[in-house]
Length: 201
Length: 379
Image (cartoon, rainbow over all chains, first blue to last red; front, top):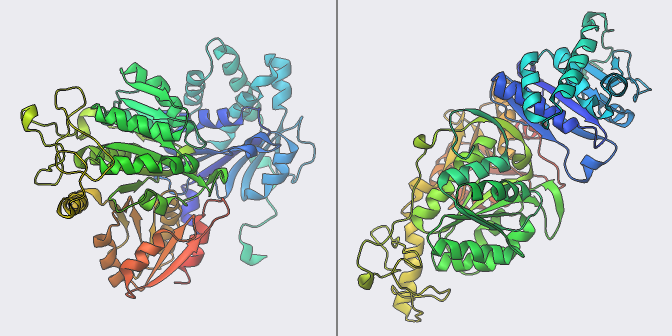
Protein backbone atom coordinates (compact mmCIF):
# COMPACT_ATOMS: atom_id res chain seq x y z
CA UNK A 1 0.00 0.00 0.00
CA UNK A 2 1.75 3.15 -1.18
CA UNK A 3 -0.83 5.87 -0.69
CA UNK A 4 1.45 8.89 -1.00
CA UNK A 5 -1.46 11.29 -1.16
CA UNK A 6 -3.09 9.80 1.85
CA UNK A 7 -0.09 10.18 4.10
CA UNK A 8 0.06 13.88 3.38
CA UNK A 9 -3.26 14.64 4.97
CA UNK A 10 -2.75 12.32 7.92
CA UNK A 11 -0.46 13.20 10.80
CA UNK A 12 0.05 10.54 13.43
CA UNK A 13 1.49 10.99 16.91
CA UNK A 14 2.09 8.34 19.54
CA UNK A 15 2.63 9.23 23.20
CA UNK A 16 4.34 6.26 24.87
CA UNK A 17 5.93 5.36 28.18
CA UNK A 18 4.89 3.43 31.24
CA UNK A 19 1.42 3.38 32.79
CA UNK A 20 1.00 6.26 35.23
CA UNK A 21 3.11 8.81 33.36
CA UNK A 22 -0.03 10.61 32.22
CA UNK A 23 0.39 9.90 28.53
CA UNK A 24 -3.28 9.29 27.87
CA UNK A 25 -4.13 12.62 29.50
CA UNK A 26 -1.55 14.32 27.30
CA UNK A 27 -3.02 12.70 24.18
CA UNK A 28 -6.58 13.64 25.15
CA UNK A 29 -5.58 17.28 25.72
CA UNK A 30 -3.75 17.32 22.39
CA UNK A 31 -6.76 15.81 20.59
CA UNK A 32 -9.12 18.27 22.23
CA UNK A 33 -6.96 21.25 21.20
CA UNK A 34 -6.74 20.05 17.60
CA UNK A 35 -10.35 18.90 17.30
CA UNK A 36 -12.48 21.16 19.44
CA UNK A 37 -10.43 24.38 19.31
CA UNK A 38 -8.56 24.18 15.97
CA UNK A 39 -11.49 22.51 14.22
CA UNK A 40 -9.60 19.73 12.44
CA UNK A 41 -10.59 16.07 12.24
CA UNK A 42 -9.02 14.02 15.00
CA UNK A 43 -9.12 10.45 16.37
CA UNK A 44 -7.60 9.55 19.72
CA UNK A 45 -7.06 5.96 20.86
CA UNK A 46 -5.06 4.32 23.60
CA UNK A 47 -3.82 1.00 24.86
CA UNK A 48 -6.41 -0.58 27.06
CA UNK A 49 -6.62 -3.19 29.80
CA UNK A 50 -3.53 -5.10 31.00
CA UNK A 51 -1.57 -3.58 28.11
CA UNK A 52 -2.06 -0.12 29.64
CA UNK A 53 -0.48 -1.11 32.95
CA UNK A 54 2.75 -2.59 31.67
CA UNK A 55 6.10 -1.11 30.79
CA UNK A 56 4.88 0.34 27.54
CA UNK A 57 1.58 2.12 27.52
CA UNK A 58 0.57 4.18 24.51
CA UNK A 59 -1.92 6.78 23.39
CA UNK A 60 -2.32 7.90 19.80
CA UNK A 61 -3.64 10.97 18.01
CA UNK A 62 -4.41 10.98 14.29
CA UNK A 63 -4.99 14.42 12.74
CA UNK A 64 -6.38 15.22 9.30
CA UNK A 65 -8.12 17.94 7.33
CA UNK A 66 -10.48 15.26 6.01
CA UNK A 67 -12.69 12.75 7.85
CA UNK A 68 -10.54 9.98 9.31
CA UNK A 69 -11.44 6.41 8.38
CA UNK A 70 -8.94 4.16 10.15
CA UNK A 71 -8.73 5.57 13.70
CA UNK A 72 -5.39 4.16 14.85
CA UNK A 73 -1.85 5.07 13.87
CA UNK A 74 -0.37 3.25 10.88
CA UNK A 75 2.97 5.04 10.34
CA UNK A 76 4.04 7.55 12.93
CA UNK A 77 5.05 11.10 12.11
CA UNK A 78 6.08 11.72 15.70
CA UNK A 79 6.87 9.30 18.49
CA UNK A 80 7.23 10.49 22.05
CA UNK A 81 8.96 7.85 24.20
CA UNK A 82 9.09 8.46 27.93
CA UNK A 83 11.01 5.26 28.73
CA UNK A 84 13.43 2.85 27.12
CA UNK A 85 10.95 -0.01 26.66
CA UNK A 86 8.55 2.20 24.68
CA UNK A 87 11.37 3.65 22.60
CA UNK A 88 12.64 0.17 21.70
CA UNK A 89 9.20 -1.20 20.91
CA UNK A 90 7.77 1.64 18.84
CA UNK A 91 10.78 3.13 17.07
CA UNK A 92 10.16 0.91 14.05
CA UNK A 93 6.65 2.32 13.58
CA UNK A 94 8.13 5.72 12.70
CA UNK A 95 8.12 7.03 9.15
CA UNK A 96 11.40 7.69 7.40
CA UNK A 97 11.36 11.36 8.25
CA UNK A 98 9.39 10.99 11.41
CA UNK A 99 10.50 12.64 14.63
CA UNK A 100 11.64 10.64 17.63
CA UNK A 101 11.28 12.65 20.84
CA UNK A 102 12.55 11.04 24.06
CA UNK A 103 12.98 11.89 27.72
CA UNK A 104 16.76 12.12 27.88
CA UNK A 105 16.79 11.21 31.57
CA UNK A 106 14.91 7.95 31.01
CA UNK A 107 15.99 6.81 27.55
CA UNK A 108 19.71 6.13 27.50
CA UNK A 109 20.15 3.96 24.44
CA UNK A 110 19.23 5.85 21.29
CA UNK A 111 18.13 3.72 18.33
CA UNK A 112 19.16 6.48 15.91
CA UNK A 113 21.09 9.72 15.81
CA UNK A 114 17.99 11.35 14.36
CA UNK A 115 16.58 12.00 17.82
CA UNK A 116 15.36 14.87 19.95
CA UNK A 117 16.25 14.27 23.60
CA UNK A 118 14.86 16.60 26.26
CA UNK A 119 14.96 15.88 30.02
CA UNK A 120 11.19 16.25 30.54
CA UNK A 121 11.07 14.50 33.91
CA UNK A 122 14.07 16.38 35.28
CA UNK A 123 12.59 19.70 34.20
CA UNK A 124 9.31 18.81 35.89
CA UNK A 125 11.03 17.70 39.07
CA UNK A 126 13.67 20.42 39.39
CA UNK A 127 12.04 23.47 37.85
CA UNK A 128 8.29 23.00 38.34
CA UNK A 129 8.64 21.06 41.57
CA UNK A 130 6.44 18.08 40.64
CA UNK A 131 7.64 15.03 38.73
CA UNK A 132 3.96 14.44 37.93
CA UNK A 133 3.81 17.18 35.29
CA UNK A 134 6.53 15.66 33.08
CA UNK A 135 3.71 14.69 30.69
CA UNK A 136 2.76 18.34 30.28
CA UNK A 137 6.35 19.41 29.64
CA UNK A 138 6.44 16.73 26.96
CA UNK A 139 3.05 17.85 25.62
CA UNK A 140 4.41 21.37 25.12
CA UNK A 141 7.40 20.05 23.21
CA UNK A 142 5.26 17.73 21.07
CA UNK A 143 2.87 20.61 20.39
CA UNK A 144 5.64 22.79 19.01
CA UNK A 145 7.66 20.12 17.20
CA UNK A 146 4.67 18.57 15.44
CA UNK A 147 3.48 21.92 14.12
CA UNK A 148 -0.05 20.49 14.13
CA UNK A 149 -1.69 22.57 16.83
CA UNK A 150 -2.19 26.20 17.76
CA UNK A 151 -0.16 26.52 20.96
CA UNK A 152 -2.64 28.94 22.56
CA UNK A 153 -5.41 26.44 21.93
CA UNK A 154 -3.24 23.71 23.41
CA UNK A 155 -3.00 25.69 26.62
CA UNK A 156 -6.75 26.40 26.60
CA UNK A 157 -7.52 22.70 26.21
CA UNK A 158 -5.06 21.86 28.96
CA UNK A 159 -6.56 24.32 31.43
CA UNK A 160 -10.05 22.97 30.75
CA UNK A 161 -8.97 19.41 31.59
CA UNK A 162 -6.73 19.69 34.66
CA UNK A 163 -8.04 19.73 38.26
CA UNK A 164 -8.77 23.12 39.83
CA UNK A 165 -5.83 24.63 41.64
CA UNK A 166 -3.24 22.98 39.40
CA UNK A 167 -3.75 25.25 36.39
CA UNK A 168 -0.75 27.44 37.06
CA UNK A 169 1.61 24.52 37.57
CA UNK A 170 0.41 22.70 34.46
CA UNK A 171 0.55 25.81 32.36
CA UNK A 172 4.11 26.51 33.50
CA UNK A 173 5.08 22.92 32.64
CA UNK A 174 3.57 23.27 29.17
CA UNK A 175 5.38 26.55 28.52
CA UNK A 176 8.71 25.08 29.65
CA UNK A 177 8.24 22.24 27.20
CA UNK A 178 7.52 24.68 24.37
CA UNK A 179 10.55 26.76 25.33
CA UNK A 180 12.81 23.73 25.40
CA UNK A 181 11.55 22.58 21.99
CA UNK A 182 12.18 26.03 20.48
CA UNK A 183 15.91 25.47 21.03
CA UNK A 184 15.80 22.54 18.60
CA UNK A 185 16.45 23.23 14.94
CA UNK A 186 14.79 20.44 12.98
CA UNK A 187 16.98 21.14 9.94
CA UNK A 188 20.05 20.25 11.97
CA UNK A 189 18.80 16.71 12.58
CA UNK A 190 20.60 14.05 10.57
CA UNK A 191 18.68 12.72 7.58
CA UNK A 192 17.07 9.30 8.03
CA UNK A 193 19.12 6.47 6.56
CA UNK A 194 16.30 3.96 6.34
CA UNK A 195 13.89 4.10 3.44
CA UNK A 196 10.10 3.91 3.63
CA UNK A 197 10.03 2.15 0.31
CA UNK A 198 10.42 -1.51 1.14
CA UNK A 199 10.76 -2.41 -2.53
CA UNK A 200 14.08 -0.61 -2.80
CA UNK A 201 15.78 -2.55 -0.03
CA UNK B 1 -24.09 18.53 27.66
CA UNK B 2 -27.45 16.82 28.03
CA UNK B 3 -28.92 19.68 26.02
CA UNK B 4 -26.51 19.47 23.09
CA UNK B 5 -26.08 22.60 21.03
CA UNK B 6 -24.04 22.92 17.83
CA UNK B 7 -20.78 22.79 19.67
CA UNK B 8 -17.82 20.53 19.13
CA UNK B 9 -17.08 17.85 21.68
CA UNK B 10 -14.29 15.30 21.96
CA UNK B 11 -16.20 12.15 22.87
CA UNK B 12 -15.62 8.41 23.11
CA UNK B 13 -18.05 6.14 21.29
CA UNK B 14 -19.53 5.09 24.62
CA UNK B 15 -20.07 8.70 25.66
CA UNK B 16 -21.79 9.42 22.34
CA UNK B 17 -24.21 6.55 22.99
CA UNK B 18 -25.05 8.22 26.30
CA UNK B 19 -25.69 11.57 24.59
CA UNK B 20 -27.80 9.84 21.93
CA UNK B 21 -29.87 8.03 24.55
CA UNK B 22 -30.53 11.20 26.53
CA UNK B 23 -31.44 13.10 23.38
CA UNK B 24 -33.85 10.35 22.34
CA UNK B 25 -35.58 10.67 25.70
CA UNK B 26 -34.14 7.73 27.64
CA UNK B 27 -34.92 8.30 31.30
CA UNK B 28 -34.24 4.88 32.83
CA UNK B 29 -31.09 2.78 32.81
CA UNK B 30 -30.46 -0.44 34.70
CA UNK B 31 -27.23 -2.27 34.19
CA UNK B 32 -24.21 -4.02 35.56
CA UNK B 33 -20.72 -2.72 34.76
CA UNK B 34 -18.65 -4.71 32.29
CA UNK B 35 -15.59 -3.99 30.15
CA UNK B 36 -15.71 -2.46 27.54
CA UNK B 37 -19.19 -0.98 28.11
CA UNK B 38 -18.75 0.44 31.61
CA UNK B 39 -18.39 4.09 30.52
CA UNK B 40 -22.02 4.08 29.39
CA UNK B 41 -23.27 3.19 32.88
CA UNK B 42 -20.72 5.48 34.49
CA UNK B 43 -21.84 8.52 32.49
CA UNK B 44 -25.54 7.78 32.84
CA UNK B 45 -25.21 7.41 36.61
CA UNK B 46 -24.28 11.10 36.62
CA UNK B 47 -26.44 12.40 33.80
CA UNK B 48 -29.75 10.58 34.30
CA UNK B 49 -30.44 11.90 37.82
CA UNK B 50 -29.70 15.40 36.51
CA UNK B 51 -32.67 15.14 34.11
CA UNK B 52 -35.02 13.48 36.65
CA UNK B 53 -34.21 10.07 35.22
CA UNK B 54 -33.41 6.89 37.09
CA UNK B 55 -30.14 4.99 37.15
CA UNK B 56 -29.93 1.62 38.91
CA UNK B 57 -26.90 -0.59 39.23
CA UNK B 58 -28.49 -4.04 39.42
CA UNK B 59 -27.13 -7.25 40.93
CA UNK B 60 -26.58 -8.78 37.48
CA UNK B 61 -27.57 -8.57 33.84
CA UNK B 62 -30.64 -10.83 34.22
CA UNK B 63 -32.13 -8.35 36.65
CA UNK B 64 -30.97 -5.40 34.53
CA UNK B 65 -32.99 -6.66 31.60
CA UNK B 66 -35.97 -7.30 33.87
CA UNK B 67 -35.76 -3.79 35.26
CA UNK B 68 -35.71 -2.06 31.88
CA UNK B 69 -38.71 -4.13 30.74
CA UNK B 70 -40.61 -3.13 33.88
CA UNK B 71 -39.76 0.53 33.51
CA UNK B 72 -40.72 0.51 29.86
CA UNK B 73 -44.11 -1.02 30.72
CA UNK B 74 -44.51 1.84 33.17
CA UNK B 75 -44.16 4.25 30.25
CA UNK B 76 -40.50 5.30 30.27
CA UNK B 77 -37.89 4.97 27.53
CA UNK B 78 -35.28 2.54 28.76
CA UNK B 79 -31.84 1.20 27.95
CA UNK B 80 -29.22 -1.16 29.28
CA UNK B 81 -25.60 -1.63 28.17
CA UNK B 82 -23.38 -4.67 28.45
CA UNK B 83 -20.85 -6.84 26.67
CA UNK B 84 -20.89 -10.49 25.54
CA UNK B 85 -21.11 -12.32 28.91
CA UNK B 86 -23.83 -9.98 30.17
CA UNK B 87 -25.65 -10.18 26.85
CA UNK B 88 -25.81 -13.97 27.28
CA UNK B 89 -27.57 -13.50 30.60
CA UNK B 90 -30.07 -11.08 29.09
CA UNK B 91 -31.35 -13.50 26.45
CA UNK B 92 -34.17 -14.98 28.52
CA UNK B 93 -35.73 -11.66 29.40
CA UNK B 94 -35.02 -10.39 25.91
CA UNK B 95 -37.44 -13.04 24.67
CA UNK B 96 -40.02 -11.73 27.11
CA UNK B 97 -39.56 -8.21 25.70
CA UNK B 98 -40.13 -9.62 22.20
CA UNK B 99 -43.30 -11.51 23.10
CA UNK B 100 -44.77 -8.78 25.30
CA UNK B 101 -43.70 -6.15 22.71
CA UNK B 102 -41.83 -3.98 25.16
CA UNK B 103 -39.77 -1.21 23.56
CA UNK B 104 -36.22 -0.94 24.93
CA UNK B 105 -32.64 -0.58 23.71
CA UNK B 106 -29.90 -3.07 24.57
CA UNK B 107 -26.34 -1.95 23.85
CA UNK B 108 -23.76 -4.69 23.42
CA UNK B 109 -20.19 -3.41 23.18
CA UNK B 110 -18.65 -6.55 21.72
CA UNK B 111 -15.45 -8.06 23.08
CA UNK B 112 -13.67 -11.33 22.40
CA UNK B 113 -15.66 -14.42 23.39
CA UNK B 114 -17.05 -16.94 24.13
CA UNK B 115 -17.46 -16.78 27.92
CA UNK B 116 -15.26 -14.18 29.61
CA UNK B 117 -13.06 -14.51 26.53
CA UNK B 118 -10.87 -11.51 25.78
CA UNK B 119 -12.32 -8.72 27.93
CA UNK B 120 -10.29 -5.85 26.51
CA UNK B 121 -10.06 -6.87 22.85
CA UNK B 122 -12.39 -5.95 20.00
CA UNK B 123 -14.48 -8.61 18.25
CA UNK B 124 -17.69 -9.01 16.27
CA UNK B 125 -18.61 -12.45 17.53
CA UNK B 126 -22.09 -11.62 18.86
CA UNK B 127 -23.73 -10.82 15.54
CA UNK B 128 -25.74 -14.01 15.06
CA UNK B 129 -26.42 -14.15 18.78
CA UNK B 130 -27.98 -10.71 18.63
CA UNK B 131 -30.33 -12.07 15.98
CA UNK B 132 -31.04 -15.54 17.34
CA UNK B 133 -29.84 -15.47 20.95
CA UNK B 134 -33.25 -15.76 22.55
CA UNK B 135 -35.21 -18.87 21.69
CA UNK B 136 -38.21 -19.24 19.44
CA UNK B 137 -39.24 -17.45 16.27
CA UNK B 138 -39.01 -13.78 16.92
CA UNK B 139 -38.43 -10.55 15.07
CA UNK B 140 -35.73 -8.24 16.25
CA UNK B 141 -33.73 -5.28 14.98
CA UNK B 142 -29.93 -5.27 15.23
CA UNK B 143 -27.93 -2.12 14.43
CA UNK B 144 -24.14 -1.63 14.31
CA UNK B 145 -22.12 1.57 14.79
CA UNK B 146 -18.71 2.40 13.34
CA UNK B 147 -17.86 5.97 14.40
CA UNK B 148 -18.45 8.27 17.35
CA UNK B 149 -20.99 10.30 15.34
CA UNK B 150 -22.75 7.04 14.41
CA UNK B 151 -22.85 6.11 18.07
CA UNK B 152 -24.93 9.24 18.63
CA UNK B 153 -27.24 9.17 15.60
CA UNK B 154 -27.81 5.41 15.49
CA UNK B 155 -28.64 5.37 19.21
CA UNK B 156 -31.36 7.97 18.59
CA UNK B 157 -32.57 5.87 15.68
CA UNK B 158 -32.54 2.72 17.86
CA UNK B 159 -34.89 4.38 20.35
CA UNK B 160 -37.12 5.62 17.54
CA UNK B 161 -37.42 2.14 16.03
CA UNK B 162 -38.05 0.57 19.45
CA UNK B 163 -40.84 3.04 20.20
CA UNK B 164 -42.38 3.07 16.74
CA UNK B 165 -42.61 -0.71 16.41
CA UNK B 166 -42.81 -1.68 20.10
CA UNK B 167 -39.77 -3.96 19.95
CA UNK B 168 -36.44 -4.38 21.70
CA UNK B 169 -33.60 -3.02 19.55
CA UNK B 170 -30.04 -4.27 19.86
CA UNK B 171 -27.22 -1.82 19.25
CA UNK B 172 -23.86 -3.44 18.57
CA UNK B 173 -20.68 -1.48 19.18
CA UNK B 174 -17.18 -2.84 19.70
CA UNK B 175 -14.12 -2.03 21.76
CA UNK B 176 -12.56 0.08 19.00
CA UNK B 177 -15.56 2.35 18.43
CA UNK B 178 -16.35 2.45 22.15
CA UNK B 179 -12.97 3.83 23.17
CA UNK B 180 -11.94 5.97 20.20
CA UNK B 181 -12.28 9.68 20.92
CA UNK B 182 -13.42 11.81 17.99
CA UNK B 183 -14.63 15.34 17.60
CA UNK B 184 -18.34 15.53 16.94
CA UNK B 185 -20.80 18.34 16.41
CA UNK B 186 -23.94 17.22 18.14
CA UNK B 187 -27.05 18.55 16.44
CA UNK B 188 -29.45 20.77 18.37
CA UNK B 189 -32.40 18.99 19.90
CA UNK B 190 -34.80 20.73 17.53
CA UNK B 191 -33.02 19.17 14.53
CA UNK B 192 -33.44 15.61 15.78
CA UNK B 193 -36.51 13.54 15.08
CA UNK B 194 -37.63 11.79 18.24
CA UNK B 195 -40.49 9.26 18.08
CA UNK B 196 -42.58 8.34 21.11
CA UNK B 197 -44.78 5.28 21.49
CA UNK B 198 -48.45 5.71 20.62
CA UNK B 199 -50.69 5.64 23.69
CA UNK B 200 -54.28 4.36 23.52
CA UNK B 201 -56.91 6.98 22.68
CA UNK B 202 -59.94 4.77 23.39
CA UNK B 203 -61.63 4.65 26.81
CA UNK B 204 -60.00 2.10 29.16
CA UNK B 205 -62.88 -0.39 28.81
CA UNK B 206 -62.41 -0.63 25.07
CA UNK B 207 -58.65 -1.07 25.18
CA UNK B 208 -57.30 -4.20 23.50
CA UNK B 209 -53.61 -4.15 24.38
CA UNK B 210 -52.46 -6.53 21.64
CA UNK B 211 -54.83 -5.86 18.79
CA UNK B 212 -52.45 -3.96 16.50
CA UNK B 213 -53.30 -1.01 14.28
CA UNK B 214 -52.96 -0.92 10.49
CA UNK B 215 -49.19 -1.26 10.87
CA UNK B 216 -49.59 -4.21 13.24
CA UNK B 217 -48.38 -2.16 16.21
CA UNK B 218 -50.63 -1.86 19.25
CA UNK B 219 -50.99 1.43 21.15
CA UNK B 220 -49.19 1.01 24.46
CA UNK B 221 -50.71 2.04 27.78
CA UNK B 222 -48.42 2.66 30.71
CA UNK B 223 -49.00 0.74 33.91
CA UNK B 224 -50.84 2.99 36.31
CA UNK B 225 -52.63 5.28 33.86
CA UNK B 226 -55.95 3.46 34.08
CA UNK B 227 -55.71 0.95 31.25
CA UNK B 228 -55.77 -2.27 33.22
CA UNK B 229 -54.26 -5.05 31.13
CA UNK B 230 -52.41 -8.33 31.32
CA UNK B 231 -48.78 -8.83 30.21
CA UNK B 232 -47.36 -12.33 29.81
CA UNK B 233 -44.54 -14.25 28.20
CA UNK B 234 -47.05 -16.85 27.04
CA UNK B 235 -48.44 -16.48 23.54
CA UNK B 236 -51.51 -14.33 24.06
CA UNK B 237 -54.69 -13.13 22.39
CA UNK B 238 -55.55 -9.50 21.65
CA UNK B 239 -56.52 -8.98 25.30
CA UNK B 240 -53.11 -10.16 26.49
CA UNK B 241 -54.34 -13.45 27.98
CA UNK B 242 -52.68 -16.82 27.21
CA UNK B 243 -54.03 -18.70 24.26
CA UNK B 244 -53.32 -21.99 22.49
CA UNK B 245 -55.89 -21.60 19.74
CA UNK B 246 -53.98 -22.27 16.50
CA UNK B 247 -55.57 -19.33 14.69
CA UNK B 248 -54.72 -16.86 17.46
CA UNK B 249 -51.20 -18.23 17.86
CA UNK B 250 -50.58 -17.93 14.15
CA UNK B 251 -52.01 -14.42 14.02
CA UNK B 252 -49.83 -13.40 16.94
CA UNK B 253 -46.66 -14.55 15.18
CA UNK B 254 -47.58 -13.15 11.78
CA UNK B 255 -48.42 -9.72 13.18
CA UNK B 256 -45.08 -9.56 14.96
CA UNK B 257 -43.21 -10.43 11.76
CA UNK B 258 -45.30 -8.21 9.51
CA UNK B 259 -44.98 -5.10 11.60
CA UNK B 260 -41.23 -5.24 11.00
CA UNK B 261 -41.30 -6.27 7.35
CA UNK B 262 -43.71 -3.40 6.63
CA UNK B 263 -41.15 -1.05 8.11
CA UNK B 264 -38.15 -2.33 6.10
CA UNK B 265 -37.63 0.96 4.24
CA UNK B 266 -37.45 2.77 7.57
CA UNK B 267 -35.46 0.16 9.50
CA UNK B 268 -32.90 -1.05 6.97
CA UNK B 269 -30.04 1.43 6.92
CA UNK B 270 -26.85 1.17 4.86
CA UNK B 271 -24.19 3.56 3.56
CA UNK B 272 -22.66 3.15 0.11
CA UNK B 273 -19.29 4.37 -1.16
CA UNK B 274 -18.09 4.24 -4.80
CA UNK B 275 -20.73 1.64 -5.69
CA UNK B 276 -22.06 3.06 -8.99
CA UNK B 277 -19.39 1.65 -11.28
CA UNK B 278 -17.99 -0.96 -8.89
CA UNK B 279 -16.88 -4.29 -10.34
CA UNK B 280 -16.07 -5.71 -6.92
CA UNK B 281 -17.18 -4.53 -3.50
CA UNK B 282 -16.70 -4.90 0.22
CA UNK B 283 -19.48 -5.40 2.79
CA UNK B 284 -18.46 -4.34 6.28
CA UNK B 285 -19.98 -3.08 9.52
CA UNK B 286 -18.84 -1.73 12.87
CA UNK B 287 -15.24 -0.61 13.31
CA UNK B 288 -14.12 -2.81 10.40
CA UNK B 289 -16.09 -0.58 8.02
CA UNK B 290 -13.56 2.16 8.80
CA UNK B 291 -10.60 0.00 7.78
CA UNK B 292 -12.56 -1.09 4.72
CA UNK B 293 -13.26 2.50 3.67
CA UNK B 294 -9.58 3.34 3.97
CA UNK B 295 -8.62 0.32 1.86
CA UNK B 296 -11.30 1.01 -0.75
CA UNK B 297 -10.18 4.63 -1.16
CA UNK B 298 -6.61 3.43 -1.54
CA UNK B 299 -7.67 0.90 -4.16
CA UNK B 300 -9.66 3.52 -6.08
CA UNK B 301 -6.53 5.69 -6.21
CA UNK B 302 -4.73 2.68 -7.68
CA UNK B 303 -7.46 2.39 -10.33
CA UNK B 304 -9.28 -0.65 -8.94
CA UNK B 305 -13.05 -0.33 -9.40
CA UNK B 306 -14.16 -1.31 -5.94
CA UNK B 307 -16.97 -0.03 -3.71
CA UNK B 308 -18.02 -0.35 -0.10
CA UNK B 309 -21.40 -1.13 1.36
CA UNK B 310 -21.49 -0.40 5.07
CA UNK B 311 -24.31 -2.13 6.94
CA UNK B 312 -25.81 -0.14 9.80
CA UNK B 313 -28.80 -2.45 10.07
CA UNK B 314 -27.60 -6.05 10.28
CA UNK B 315 -31.04 -7.54 10.94
CA UNK B 316 -33.55 -7.58 9.36
CA UNK B 317 -30.86 -8.22 6.74
CA UNK B 318 -30.99 -5.43 4.10
CA UNK B 319 -31.50 -7.84 1.25
CA UNK B 320 -33.05 -5.27 -1.06
CA UNK B 321 -29.84 -3.23 -1.04
CA UNK B 322 -27.40 -6.13 -1.10
CA UNK B 323 -28.98 -8.36 -3.77
CA UNK B 324 -28.67 -5.90 -6.72
CA UNK B 325 -25.01 -5.30 -5.85
CA UNK B 326 -24.34 -9.03 -5.81
CA UNK B 327 -25.82 -9.10 -9.31
CA UNK B 328 -23.72 -6.13 -10.45
CA UNK B 329 -20.33 -7.17 -9.09
CA UNK B 330 -17.93 -9.99 -9.85
CA UNK B 331 -16.76 -10.52 -6.27
CA UNK B 332 -17.58 -9.38 -2.78
CA UNK B 333 -15.20 -9.32 0.19
CA UNK B 334 -16.57 -9.58 3.72
CA UNK B 335 -14.01 -8.71 6.40
CA UNK B 336 -15.18 -9.52 9.93
CA UNK B 337 -13.70 -9.91 13.40
CA UNK B 338 -15.35 -13.35 13.70
CA UNK B 339 -15.30 -16.55 11.65
CA UNK B 340 -17.88 -15.32 9.16
CA UNK B 341 -21.21 -14.47 10.79
CA UNK B 342 -22.59 -11.88 8.36
CA UNK B 343 -21.05 -13.64 5.36
CA UNK B 344 -23.58 -16.42 5.99
CA UNK B 345 -26.39 -13.95 5.37
CA UNK B 346 -24.72 -12.68 2.22
CA UNK B 347 -24.19 -16.21 0.92
CA UNK B 348 -27.86 -16.94 1.61
CA UNK B 349 -28.94 -13.98 -0.51
CA UNK B 350 -26.23 -14.50 -3.11
CA UNK B 351 -27.39 -17.84 -4.54
CA UNK B 352 -24.30 -18.12 -6.73
CA UNK B 353 -24.59 -14.68 -8.38
CA UNK B 354 -21.27 -13.40 -7.13
CA UNK B 355 -17.99 -14.78 -5.81
CA UNK B 356 -18.14 -14.41 -2.01
CA UNK B 357 -14.75 -14.04 -0.28
CA UNK B 358 -14.40 -13.98 3.49
CA UNK B 359 -11.63 -12.34 5.46
CA UNK B 360 -11.71 -13.17 9.16
CA UNK B 361 -9.65 -12.29 12.19
CA UNK B 362 -10.29 -13.83 15.58
CA UNK B 363 -7.04 -13.09 17.39
CA UNK B 364 -8.38 -10.09 19.31
CA UNK B 365 -6.78 -7.62 16.90
CA UNK B 366 -8.49 -4.99 14.80
CA UNK B 367 -8.37 -5.58 11.02
CA UNK B 368 -6.11 -2.99 9.36
CA UNK B 369 -6.70 -1.28 5.99
CA UNK B 370 -3.53 -2.93 4.66
CA UNK B 371 -4.96 -6.41 5.19
CA UNK B 372 -8.18 -5.54 3.40
CA UNK B 373 -6.28 -3.87 0.56
CA UNK B 374 -4.18 -7.01 0.10
CA UNK B 375 -7.40 -9.04 -0.22
CA UNK B 376 -8.95 -6.53 -2.63
CA UNK B 377 -6.09 -6.82 -5.08
CA UNK B 378 -6.77 -10.56 -5.30
CA UNK B 379 -10.52 -10.30 -6.03
